Length: 144
Image (cartoon, rainbow, N blue to C red):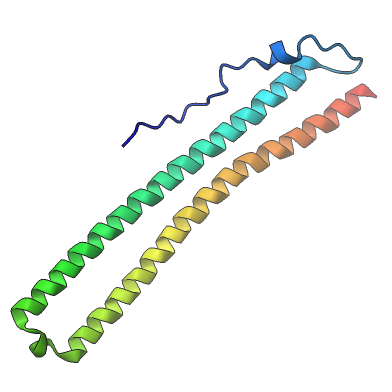
C-alpha cells in the first residue's frame, strides 16, 4: 500500500505575492490573500477528513469480508461434520436468516460511516463559505 500524505499542499503558497501588487481604491490585497488561504485550508481540511473517513470505511469493509469468510468456513465445517441431512432445512433456514440480518447490519454500519464522512467534509466547506460571506459583508461595509 502506498503512503498517503494528509498535509495541506497549499500551506507554503503565499497569496500576498500574487495579490500584493494590485492597487485599487477600497481593495485590500492582504485581506484577499488571507481569505484565499483560508479557503484552501478549508478544502485541505475537508479532503483530509474525507480521506480518513473513507480509509476507515475500506478498513471496515475488509474486516466484514474477513468475518464473513470465517463464518462461511465455520458453517461449512459444521455441515461437513454433522452431515447436511442431519441439520435439516430448519437449521439451514435459521443460518440463512442470521446471515441476512448480519449483512443488513453491516450495510447499515458502512452507510453510516460514509454518511458521517460526507457530512463532516461538507460542514468544513460550508463553514468556510459562511465565513466568506461575512468577510464580504464586512468588506463592503468598510468600503462605504
